[in-house]
Image 1 (cartoon, one colour):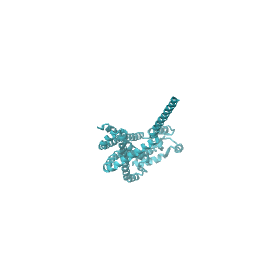
Image 2 (image 1 turned 180 degrees about the vertical axis):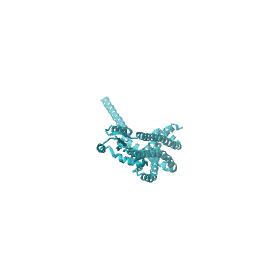
Image 3 (image 1 turned 90 degrees about the vertical axis):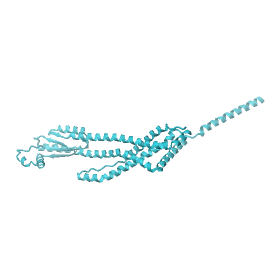
Image 4 (image 1 turned 60 degrees about the vertical axis):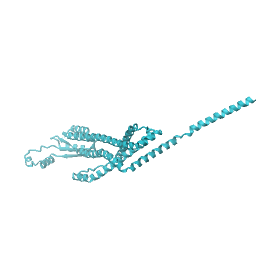
Length: 342
């Protein structure tokens, strides 16, 4: 009986110990922070680093403004060239619209057939204007422009044919489309010769393509300059916090933890430089707007200077922040390896 009681007590004690161990283990598993708490801590830490990096910029406003101004110049130059290219393309489109195709009809073309062809071409929606120049009108115009009025009186008959001058729409602004349209008009029955200065169109598009490629190349060079400027600025910041970084590494901080505030500093520098670049461009365009409008009126053109759109401004700000982050990341990743405690 005594042995049986002792066995029961021993089994009961083992059962209680087992339950206690299970409770301790469950408590250990649930006592740590959950996913929600980890996310909250992560966001709070980033908010603290954002405020801290921004505070450090305002603590040295002179040097920060100088660095941002240098970045702004590096960003404003390619952005300004893009604006110039956009306005040049607008002007080139207007010149393309002014390119007109001249159709010289056969000398024996009947007036009724010429009028029928004129109405047929005028009905096309891809032609902006179709102008008919009669032989009499052509001779009078030649007489007025050339100054050979007396000599023309000795001609037995008018040597000029009917001419149709067609102004195509922007659908035929490209060289390939213009060549296709020219071949189509050349096949018309009454047309003796269709003429368009395609070489001029080719040269125009070649110049625009060259300018576009040159601006892209300069943009890459200035982007590299922005990365180097931000990297050098962050290098100086790392050097000033060298002792602090050593202490933080001693207590077990990771490189990612140490890198984070410097990355936000690089973003602030890039974003501030982009804002200053946009401000510089707006001031420059406002300064040029009135002279350009006066020049356009003098030539009877409806050309208007285009500024940066909202999407272009957002792209500029995003590029500035992105290049600032990249320059900071490269600089921090390189110099953190050189700083070790002890």
